[in-house]
Length: 214
Image (tube, rainbow, N blue to C red):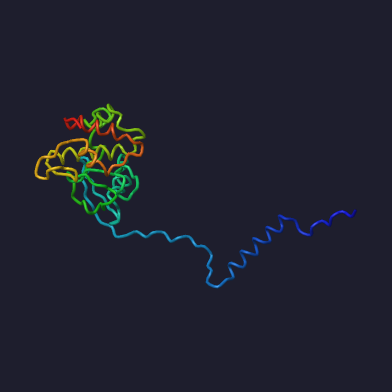
């Protein structure tokens, strides 16, 4: 029996030749341009922005498109405020701006020129914790802790809203002072997502600080 005829070209050489042919065809097709790197984003208009953050004045030169969240994290190195979804859906970036809790990712820093901002760093320190920080520790109101700064800032805002008599969607009487019930707390904190599911402990912590039973 005759031995098989050895191939004229190896499999490896055939693959190399095929790849080279495909590249040549692609580059010769009209309208088919070689991949080019995306152009770098150009700097936008700059403005001076004055912010008082945690009681400290700051003068910043910012691209007008800079969000308050990025101004805090990238320009002031206050990384306690977390970037979660960056679309205002998880609440990890909640801060208190001029007395109101807001999502820092949904607002531009220039919109707060001259304003007062409080972040988690401004509420307390490990040695002198804010009552809500201490309550979160006591009630194990966190697991991974990523959402905790936003949860605590939001809780500060919730307690203040209740004290001022601001109703929520579950308040039975819009003209009466809202009760700090579990339903009220869960509704008011619904914009803050805890992916670990520590909601029950978070409600317990807020309830203790608010001085009522939820």
